Length: 256
Image (tube, rainbow, N blue to C red; front, side, top):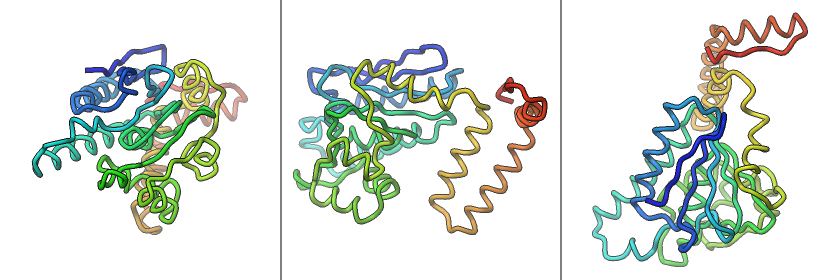
């Protein structure tokens, strides 16, 4: 299946393990990824790290040979499978980071964009080159990219198939930061260390407020924030956090 899931302390590590094909995504891999996300959702992990095996690519995109000679209904089902799987990753209650090295093209970039964060080594290259094949992105790229970089820049990438290097991707806001080359898991752990020490309840509410608000009119977004902020006050972690502040000590969150 070429998808590996492991747990390392507070971290779930998802590895695309098909380095001989630059980790190109087969439909069986997307199905296995969906199963891995379900396992993460029911685990005690506090963060997810998504990496690609081998030194050349995070993920070179979909397996083009597998996309050939499929009828209309099969092609639509394939698109919906990718969209549904990546959306499950995006909606996890815990944050995720894609560690990009080498190529992150097509479906690979769409997978990375479904993560909460993206970090990239200086050698990384990202793009949505589907237009060069007479196609357009089908796993959420046309929807997530403009939310990250704006409509004009998204259209520039989608309609030209242009590749960005790591520094430009960072300037555009497509990746959070450029990181030194090294072990991808350790890179992910170092980046995510800033996010795993807080209440999972509050972290989940914060992500939901931002995510839902992005798709709502401003007034509705403020309503969403008010509702989730009010819910956060009802958790035991919020009481512990405020008491710890008053008592000048570190809080001991229980994720409840």
